[in-house]
Image (tube, rainbow, N blue to C red; front, top):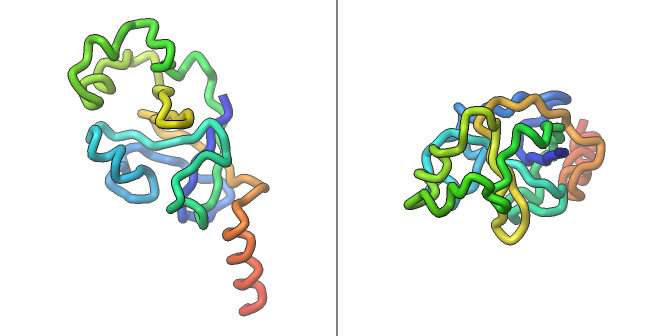
Amino acid sequence: MILYHYTTVDKPVLTIDPKKFNDHHYYSNSEYKASSIPRSFWYTNSTDREDFFDNGILYIADIPDSKIYDLKQDELGLQEKSSDAHDLLSKVPNRYSGVLYNVGYDVVSMFVSVKATRSKKQPALYAIKKQLEQLIN
């Protein structure tokens, strides 16, 4: 599964570490309030993102489908067995590295570090920023 992540860090390759969950580069405030379980947040479509990522830098990672628990299908019935988001995330079996769910669009929360590559295709604001930097320098 191809996943997309936005951040303000600009490197050719970046390791997205869920242990840095408290760093605002890795989550939205609403997600943090739902559960404090360390995780990084990814989109399944590069154009689906919160507005505050409009000037973010896009990274891409390819994660095997078998490593992502599909909460939309929820074959293990975790939603019925859970009292809240924190309880649900704590019940995802260890054989999965992340969980897919829908918040109006599909997102994946990853529980493990993920090595990602900066996308060659960046949001428009990123391209403008880079052009301005070149003019200044």
